[in-house]
Amino acid sequence: MITLYHAPRSRSSSIIWLLEEIGEPYKIVITPIVYGDGRGAPAPESYRAIHPHKKVPAIDHDGTVVFESGAVVLYLADAFPKAKLAPAITDPERAAYLTWITYLTATISPIIGARIRGWDTESPSGFGTFEEMEDFLAKTLEARPYVAGGNFTAADVLVAAFVRFFKGTLLPDRKCYNDYITRLEKRPAFQRAQAKDNG
Amino acid sequence: MITLYHAPKTRSSRFIFLLEELGAPYEIKQVTFRRADGSGQIDPANPHPHKKVPAISDDGEVVFESSAITLYLTDKFPKNGLGPQVGDKKRGAYVSILAYYAGVLEPAFMSKFMNVAVPRGSAGWVEVEEAMKFIIETLSKGPYLLGDKFSGADVLYATTFGLFGSSPLLPESPVIKDYVARCLDRPAYARAQAKDGTR
Image 1 (cartoon, one colour):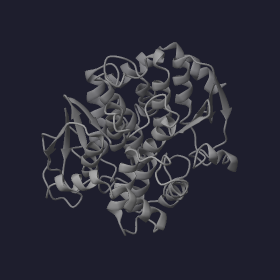
Image 2 (spheres, each protein chain N blue to C red):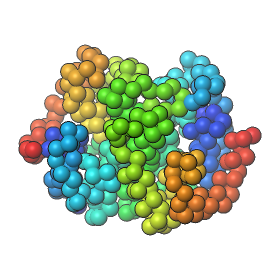
Image 3 (cartoon, rainbow over the protein chains, first blue to last red):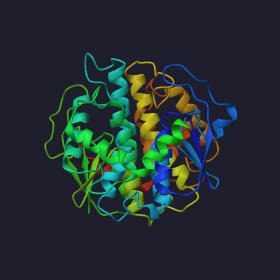
């Protein structure tokens, strides 16, 4: 059994989509968090056993705890290979797959954080330049339909959340972004997840 | 065949250490890059989109981001047991601690270096002090991040803490000091040091 620790409309929302793609039974445990605008309240101290900083997402899969978005995505996609959401370890697309999952959380997310808070107005932040990041994202999505290659993977679940949220604002209005999101929003699992997150 | 894009005495040095631990066939390609102080030239031979190090290529497929490279390599070269494989009880902890390095620890250090306060809630990471509290707690339970067994995650964390040495970025801790000494006192680390090269 899979348990998802989830806060509505947060970083854990993408994991509902992933779980819908996987199609295994799971349950959602609504977990309080402090949102970016200060709303909400921290989770009880007991939740620290699941996530060291009491954030979401985290999962418990038959007693195995996994936390951090990138880890949850990697773990689940590998654990359920029938869903074909992760290129196999011997597949050449594995390289781009692992890179994109990590790049999103380790570089894109801090670069965006720096842009929003004006940490990069005088000189690029130490996370990397916004322009190089955006150029790489656009070039990737102009060259292929999904970030790892020709097939939809679990990495797209993370990248899509980011592109959907910022396209037309921090991200320029590009055809490749619109096409990518249109392609992904058509997926039945995405639509089921939207309903459950808002639910 | 793995090609490591490397610059001496940088974050790519640790991957010589990991490749030596794995007993994997590899070659080192030295590249120059623009250092934080403005010295050094961008190297067009470097496949990294931000022209940083490290990056690897495996018969032309590129992987970058330290955590992604680590997971890619320990999955691809499992014989020396440097990372729990898919299906192993410790796989969840392994991918969590790798994702934590990428999404929490590195941005935490960079934020401290940039002298900016980490916004609670909207940022995916936390302050260095809070992250190190969790790492020290983890290392108080066993000699390595996953318990008794040295893994690819220790290559990342121990070399990072070793690199910071007595820098004010890293809060002083005997637990961390002992951990770094334990991890770097390995024959593979000595071999890697010999191959690191000079600037």
